[in-house]
Image: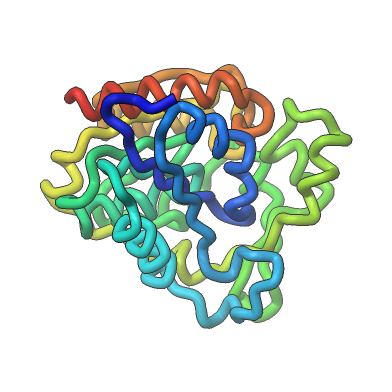
Length: 249
């Protein structure tokens, strides 16, 4: 199937995961005639030899820039969870090459804010309540025994067990990076796909961000924090509809 106006979806995973989290929607998006580029953030591949202490927010942005430069069609950046900050900054920095931003249960924050600032004192997040920092402070993980409940409680335990070994420790330096946004970002069409049963980024927090920075398009998925696996078909349809709405706006 080839649409009259194909798009380049650039999918960016969040903290602790990897490009693997997008696997369920890759081929379905391509089957609809779109180009799909899946970013692997530095240090998140299973065979990565990069030290967490050496990884910076700028390194993440560079990997997204490579995907933007490789895209053949109008670019729609899709950020999951922490990657909301990444697509915001990438949208700001490469606004001329980006047609829209889709935040999937993601952090959509104002200029001057970082992930660590946004989550300081946050309540109701199973993920944040069970963080474990490395002794050297350069990385942080979600305690293994709480990962299922934190990020995919609506996925059967046996299914989660297949992907749990792919989780990695997250470098802390990028989590402390403050956004630097201007009207370049503010003028980009934005969509927010909220997940109503999210136990990592609670719905109340998602909605507070939407109230502060209203998106041009919004929709709800009845899922936890990983709809790529637990609500694949619904997510696919929302990605298609959101991108179409942004391109028209």
